[in-house]
Image (cartoon, rainbow, N blue to C red; front, top):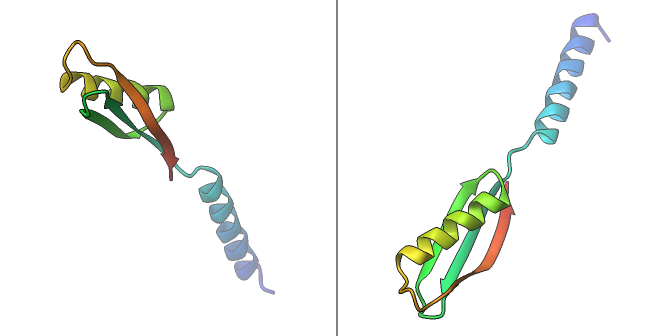
Length: 77
């Protein structure tokens, strides 16, 4: 194997390893109230921020007598 091929293979292996270990994950959540109103979030870097956004969106559509609750949170790549 020539030096150029070895360098190219090493660069390819390094790129594959670093890309696999640094994949980006994004959180999304859904919240629903007792009234049936809803809120959701997507593409958040952490679960807490995604939960907060979904609850705030639900609360905007809900009366003060109803409570919003998180029904689902998922982390997707």
